[in-house]
Image (cartoon, rainbow, N blue to C red; front, side, top):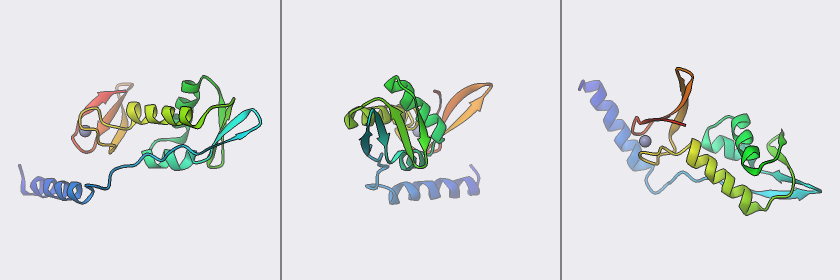
Length: 131
Ligand SMILES: [Zn+2]
């Protein structure tokens, strides 16, 4: 291992230590009803927290709830009435499937395409897993 890599490793270790106790927190869903629609008010905030594309995230939520909807500003408008806990559960599913590393549970992951297959690449432990 070169000195440079050694230094990088040290830097990472230190970064881990400083972030301890300051866990990645998935925001709780904030929803409101509007007629027969359900609005996920903090949609954009959640997408930004998990570091995923809004379109990708919104499609997952819609598929999970078996409905459709659209993004309006920073909110996601869903057709149908859904309880907050239900929407929240879908967001947790998204984080489990698309955000947390299955090896080390770090949320510091990226989705990369390799030979047409989407892989989750973990920035923390280097694991690659198909998603
Ligand atoms: Zn990992």
